Structures are given as C-alpha cells and as structure tokens.
Image (cartoon, rainbow, N blue to C red; front, side, top):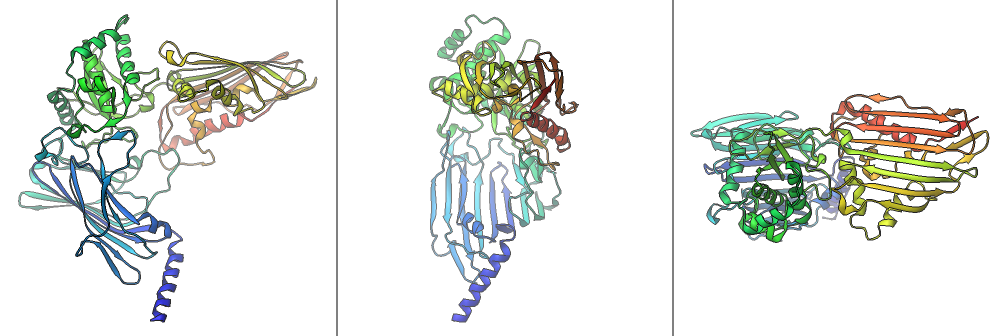
Length: 634
C-alpha cells in the first residue's frame, strides 16, 4: 500500500511538471444540446469535461457557476463529478444527495436587476484531476413584460437565436453545439472568422443542426485588439428572417407597452427645458443633454419590467434613475412631446453586429427624424458632460432603429479628426540662466474635450489636479496661475485651460548654443491621447485594433531666446499622410525666436491589422519628439 501511494505521488509530480509547460486547463469536450419548442422556449443541456493542468487551473475550477435571471430563466446542475488522478470518483451532484450547491444573488455594480448564480463548491483539485459536469437551462437572458406562465418564452415569441463562440481562453479538444428545431422555423446560420464542421439531419417535422470543431486553441491577444467575437471563430443562428423583422418587433413591443406615453408632468418639464430654444437642433440638444445630465445611471429591478421593454416615461421622469434603455426611453418621450418623430434603437458597444439577425445588442439609444427626413442618433447615456449628442467613441458601430415600417442594420459613421481636436499652444521665454517662463493654453473639442474635462470630475481640489498635468511631465515646474472655463458651462463653449508657468534650469543656454525640449511637445494632458498607450515595440499585428476615438492633436510653441541663433541641429521625422492618419513637424528660426509645430491626426476608431505600421509610426514619432532636445547653434 505504501509503495502504491508513493507511486501515485511521484506520478502526480511528474504530471504537474509536464503540464506546467503549457496551459492551465484543457477542456476535453464541451457539448451543448438545444431543444426548441414551437413557442421559442429552449431547453439547453450542457456537458463538459475539464482536465487540470496546473495549480492555477485547479484554483480556477474549485467552484463552478451558472448565471441566470430568475424572471426569465431556470438553471440547474444535473451532474458534477471529480475524476481523481488516483482513479477515485467524487460525485458532488447527481448521486444520492447533492453536496455544496448554493443559489444566491449575483454580485452587481450599477445594475441591480435581481440576477442570481448557482454555484457548486468543487473544493480541492489536484493537477491531473478531471472535472465533469452536466447542466440544464431553460429560458433566455433578459426578462420581458409578460405573465409568469410564459416567462421562459423569448421576447420574439416563436423565434430562436444564439451566439456561439468557437474560441476559448484555454484549449478545447472538441466542442459540439446541436440544435433540434422545427423544420418550418427556417433556421439561418453562418460561421464567422473560421471554419466549423456543419451537419443537418431531418427527423420527421424537425431538423437537427450539428456544429463541431476540434483542437480549439487560444490566440495570443494583442493590446487594443477588437473583441474576441470580432476576430475569432463564432457561430450565429436565428429563425428571424431579417433585421427589418427585428426592427418592427422592437418598435411594436415598446409602443404596445406605452413606454413613451407623455404625462402632464413630462409635458411641463419639456416646456421648461425648451424656453428660449433657438431652432430645431437647439431643441434636440437641450432635451438630450437634460436627460443625460439629470438621470442617474443605476438599474433597479422593476420585477418583470426588465429587458427589451423600455420602462414608461412616467416612472423614468419620477425616479430620474435607470440604465441605457431608460435614458433612451425618456428622451424618446420628451422628443415626441416636443413634436419630433423619435424612436428607440439598439446597438452593440464593443463588438461588431453581423448580418444574421441574432440578438447582438447590449445598449439602447435614440434616433430623431430631422425636418430634412434624415435620422440623427442620440445617446443620453454616453454624453453626460460631453458636447456631442452622439458619442464618437461609438463610431463604426452597428445599430438597429425600431421603426414602424422596419429598418435594416446600419453603421455609425466615422467622425472626422478635426471634430475632436486637442490644441496645446505655448508662448514661452528662456532666460540666460535656463529658466523657462510663459503660458500654456489647452483647448479641445468633442471627445478630446470630454477627456480633458474629466479632470474636473470627482475632484475636490481642481487646482491640484490641474497642476499635476504639468508636474507629470516636468516635476520641477512652478505653476504661477491657472485659469479655465467653468465645467458646468460645457455646452456654451469648448474647454480652455491657461497655465502661467516657471521652470528653473529647464534649458542649457550659452551664446554659442541652446538646448531644450519644447514644453508644448511633451504630451501634456496625455489623458486625451489614448493612442500613446499602444505598445510600439510590437512591429506587426495579426488582428484589427481600436483606439478610443478619431482625433487631431496640434502642439505649437513660440520660444523667445536670450541670444540669436542661426542653425538648428534637429532631425525632423518624415511626414505621413494616408487613410490611417497623418503626422508632420516643422520649425523656424527668426533670430532669437524659435517656432515649432507638430500635428498628429488619427482618422478613425477601428483599424485593420495592415494599418498598424502607419499608426505605429505616427505614435512613435510623437513619443520620440516628446523627449528629443532641440539644439540651436550660432
């Protein structure tokens, strides 16, 4: 017996050493079987076997969880078994009695809709152990206003959709996804970003669709890359014929509920907001920003009212509290009360929406029909203290309007870089002892304005926070004074911040030469230049990537020197100008005055992998010039 125990201990150590060379865990198989009823109600059976490869993998699987919303879904663990490397089997669920199963309220932040989790405490696992479990689920993700009897039936009654990732962060030997549906439902499906084995089999009035893929390996992620579902293999399925059908359904479900019905209180509030409104756009802007700034983002459970149905305007106006759909719903109601044609819309923040009409949405917005017949997007969720009506951080993003006649899937347009300019202008003087004095003026618009203006948010000491922006690049600087536009006046004018500074020993100065770095080019307020966070040591990228927004950065400086100089020993990077962006740097010497200007333009939010070399060069140029001294000589 002692020899056997010693053998198993040695075996476990050998296995641990071998496994530690690679992944933390390996899924031997991941199987899902879906049985769809004619109502759209789906019964989902999962079966999974995971092998532990490292201690981290053991810790990651010491508990297993199922997330669900009790208003719209039911879940259970049917079997949980640990197959020990020693040959022993521990049945935690599915035996004579179930052990250590917990059903509790899920952790939440900002959205408190009563989501729950079921958890099985697996406990200690050793490297080489295998964890097998079976699960059952019926229902769907979000609840909708309907009676309790049909609460598990999906919002589009009689329809089915699913988004199935055939990618993983740990290896999978075999993944199988099978759907059993009525043939008359006309299942539409498509595989994106890869290949999946597809089989169909008819059994009477039903068709079984089987999708499988072997040897799924995790990819090496790249900083700033698009979402996994945008670049890795996924399967979309839907019985909805097209996006127009989804659009009509979304319109009707909210109109039937009365989400946008005006009340006396709402009409009165709209009249107050529009006092003095100059024109159509001014009225739209006032209503959008009132909702954005006066309705807190916090989702409180309203029972069966959560999900696709937008809460009614009466409740939203009274509570001034809700999530994106509540903000959008209140804005639609207010716009209609003001005489506009307005509708709710759905979009997907952070991921692409593909042509198969699966429910690829996580965000609700608003559209208003202008007098010229064009629709304009409005997003009261993303524009508190932002000068835009629609956040350009959402450009190149799919959206679907809920219109009575239906609408096709559309994409938000690219916003020009000049709509999001950041100007850093300095007028400085260098004394004979190397002290630099002068002013630095920061101005910005659009998303750059929002990034700069965030310095005033959640700050009790604005002066201190503003000084830190200078001290971050030049710790010995003395900020003599700082003046700025009032944060609450963000709709009246773009942000403007003016510093009066003095920096001792900033430059090396003699009659024969002067050496210094232009303070304006040292990337003050880098908080508004997210492109500088990319790792430019990476020469090639395999996957598309995204920045926060398109932008234009101009850094200019006029420097008065104590002596006259005739030559500048400074290598100017080559100019760049293509569809990705542009870069230029130029300078002039006029006796004792030196002028320099650097311009960076990044033309969009999403980029293809092939655009990385240009993007990278622009970022590298700006980064290098921020620490590159100018040398002026006689």
